[in-house]
Image 1 (spheres, rainbow, N blue to C red):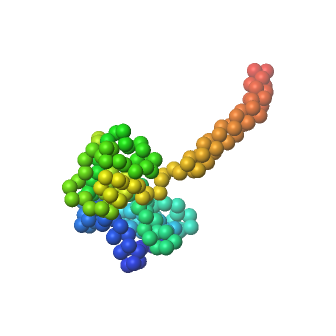
Image 2 (cartoon, one colour; image 1 turned 135 degrees about the vertical axis):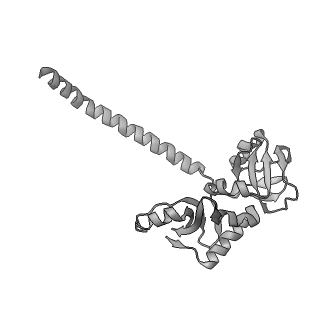
Image 3 (cartoon, helix red, strand yellow; image 1 turned 90 degrees about the vertical axis):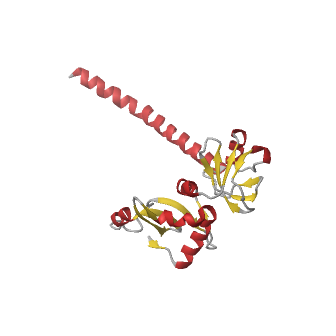
Length: 200
């Protein structure tokens, strides 16, 4: 785990500034303490200095995660925001789009939003501007680019691709099979121990 270099900081801040503009300073200097960005395994974590000092006792190879993952650097040194950064970007977003309930699910599955699916949009939203997409109940959904004000396309890595979803289901099935196998094999042992307890 290390601080970001000047180039990494510039690339990351340019990306975040597309969504929150000059409110970027509010992410670092917060009333509840000072927060900073740290790089670990090509992922950028947003963490308070208090937790950072406590984590200094853990070796880098044993550390899995620290704070909130804001995004990652690709092999071509581009920065991609992760969905976990949404809670921190949404309150400071300059440009917002509200989607009607009928278009929410389609958008979350990665499809475009048609003009009929838009509820409201912030005035003066430019093409390719970073926007935060909300449901009509003001729940933030994602932060894509506005490819066209009336035609949004999500640019996030999906939390669950179809393949990882199937892998998850397979893992659950394997877990239940293992538990069932344990029950079948342990049942005679449990019954034998009950008989011995009764005989005593």
